[in-house]
Image (cartoon, rainbow, N blue to C red; front, side):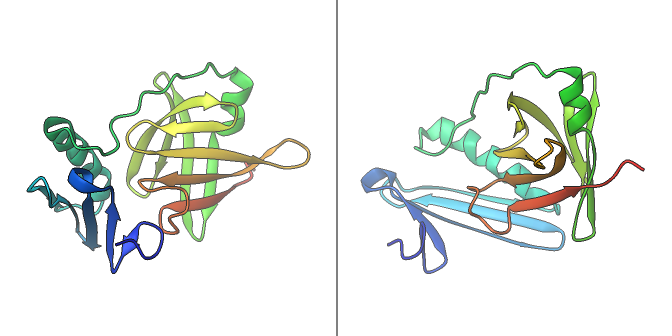
Length: 176
């Protein structure tokens, strides 16, 4: 039974009847894991990875299993990209920092990318100052000053925007 948000005593719980499910993940240096179980269906999936970035992989595996068993969980989302002007691309690209973590938004023939912490994600522009992360669920929102200059970005990934450990705020570094 949910007690706080969708959580009940450590497990995320959602749905009703055949669609009732509970899940939980775990991690430490060098591995990540996650499981999801549907008690009424007698079905479950357990994903264990031996990599620090396993949290990027397990949602994809869960979605693939969900497609086979027709589970009511988030499926791959299709987004319609918008065209960016050269000026917008130039504004977004650059170096950003948060508590000693440096990342960059880069541009090449494949489009815009997030790079940092050993991760590279392709970004898809969906509206002005908003980019979808192509490789997993998540978004990047650019913040602007009163003078309309990019001052930083807010990013969330892998969980809804309220998840405190999956939402980051970066400040744009000067290009000096």
